[in-house]
Amino acid sequence: MVGHLTREQILRDHAFTQGLAETQIASLAPLATEVAFADGEVILVEGHRSQYFYLLLTGSVAVELHTPSFTVSVQALGPGEVFGWSALLDHQDTLFQVRARERTTALRVAGPDLAELCRSDTGLGNQILLRTLQVVAGRVRATEAMFAEMCGVRVSGHQAQKRFAN
Image (cartoon, rainbow, N blue to C red; front, side):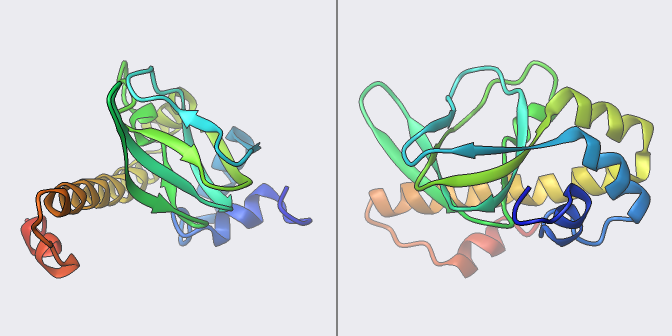
């Protein structure tokens, strides 16, 4: 674990899981495994079946739109952020490629295990759903801003937030 912290302590402090009930943290902790990635390592491959949900602890990753012709970085994520949300959905392929930008550590949770826990603990499921929807909305805003800039239009954060407020 990071330093000498337990998984429970890490989950209590992580921005995504902060504020969850102690019982929810206690049920999540056994599902989490710490993993490390090398600089430049591809963690998620666009178009492949999603298997894991990741909570970033150290380092950073780039969320990329990858095609055979080009790769565009859509968003950089750091400690306290998450990726791999599509692992929570049945039979969902990954929409973006995710690559480590430096040595990076994360807690990894198998998507089916987390989804089952959310079904059995509906309070936790509701919290995970709401928090994940915020992540998805942020990814959409970042993608929109990147493509607008590629087309020569600058989209401020405020404009993107207004557009997705509803």
